[in-house]
Length: 183
Ligand SMILES: Cc1cc2nc3c(=O)[nH]c(=O)nc-3n(C[C@H](O)[C@H](O)[C@H](O)COP(=O)(O)O)c2cc1C
Image (cartoon, rainbow, N blue to C red):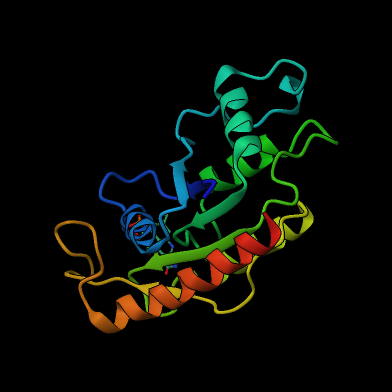
C-alpha cells in the first residue's frame, strides 16, 4: 500500500501547546498508510512581497514540503477571535509568487483546541475562508472544536477520555476518507 504524505501545520509555537498535543493525538488515530510531517513555521521571516523572486531558504523549504504533501492537516488555536499571525504568515509564504500557490488542490482538514468553551470557532472559520481562496478543498463536516482541560491528554500523548477519543476518531475517519478521495 503506498503511503499518503500529510503536511501538518500547527498554529501555536508554544512549547506545551495543546494544539501540538492535539496534532500528535490525531496522528495516533490515523491509519498506518498515512505519514505525517509537521511543517516548521517558527523560523520563517515575515512575508514581504519584495522577496518573492529570492525567497529565504526557510521559505523554499516550506514550499517544498507543502508541494511534496498529498494532504493537509491544520491544527490551530484561536488568537483574538482569529488564526494566529504565524499561521497566516506561513499560508501567505507558500501561496506566492502569484501563480505558484503550493497549497492548491491539497485536501485539508481544519481542527483546533482552546481552553474556552467556544474556542477556535472564529479561528477555524477565518482559516477556512483563506483556504477557499487558496483553492484548498477543506472537509466541511464533521466540524470539531476541542475544549481542553487538564487531563485531556494521556502521558503518552493519547486522548484520556473514551468519549473524547471516539469523537476525534470520527473526525479523523471523515478527514482520512476526504483525503483518500481527493489526493
Ligand atoms: C494572544 C492570545 C489570544 C487569545 N485569544 C483567544 C480567543 O480569541 N479565543 C479563545 O478561545 N482562546 C483565546 N486564547 C486562549 C487560547 O485558547 C489558549 O492560550 C490556548 O492554550 C492556546 O493554544 P495552545 O495551547 O496550542 O498554545 C488566546 C491566547 C492568546 C495567547
